[in-house]
Image 1 (cartoon, rainbow, N blue to C red):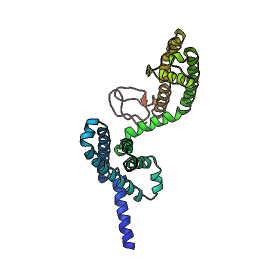
Image 2 (image 1 turned 135 degrees about the vertical axis):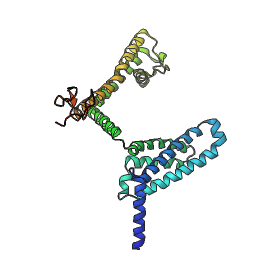
Image 3 (image 1 turned 90 degrees about the vertical axis):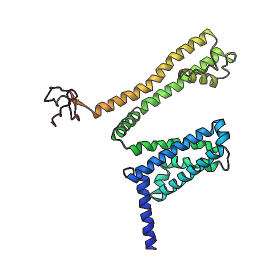
Image 4 (image 1 turned 180 degrees about the horizontal axis):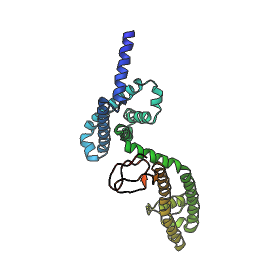
Amino acid sequence: MKNRKSKYETFREKIKIILYGTNTILGRMFDLVLLGLILLSVLLIMLDTVEGISQKYHEQLLICEWAITVFFTIEYILRIISIQKPIKYIFSFYGIIDLLAVLPMYLSIFFPGASILSIVRALRFFRLFKILHIPQISHQSAQLKDAIEASKEKILVFIYFVLISTVIIGSVMYLVEGKESGFTSIPMGIYWTIVTLTTVGYGDISPQSPLGQFIAALVMILGYGIIAVPTGIVTAEFAKNTLKNNTVSGKKTCRKCQSQLHFDNAKYCYECGTQLPNN
């Protein structure tokens, strides 16, 4: 019994190295194979929606899709049994995505057409950041995350203002234009306002009166500002964080060209490339 347990533990450790060891050769090889299968799966799903290809190769595409699903199912089970705290993985972001990657094909047995939901497997490409593990990408990702986190409250206040504005403008357009112009209700007016503010402009509803067209022009101009504001908020926070992490100091002076105002963490001169003094 003890020997069996030892073999099982050894098996778990080997599987864990392959599945979670992004810094090992086997782990990287497995991750690359996994990404290839994810790409192939998404491609197969897209091809199956093309009428000509689906009619001719539907059975072959279905067989390939089931083969990939079985592989993902085995991988999901092995991920659960290879770690000490399976619950932590099951309810993690990657765990939920991995489960959603295999469910649609099994659901298609009882609900025809559910297999199209397998396109959610594209979300598994988020593993690419984990696999590459490039410091520059990780650093930029962390900075962007911090910037979004810092600007969260400002963006929420802005969205709240936009929502109130759409309700008011939609109500005004309903009163100004009426049912004759397609504004059959206040919700329909709100729908038109959102479409116009986001500069989508489907054209299914359009104001006909001069006053309505004047209001529409103002909403269109306002739309450009609405698009720019959240971008500006996040960009400002991103720049603030970048400046905080890379403060400029005049203490480091290049011995060769006498250039100053280098970053505190700079090692080489930005002008001539000479190594800077530590102090």
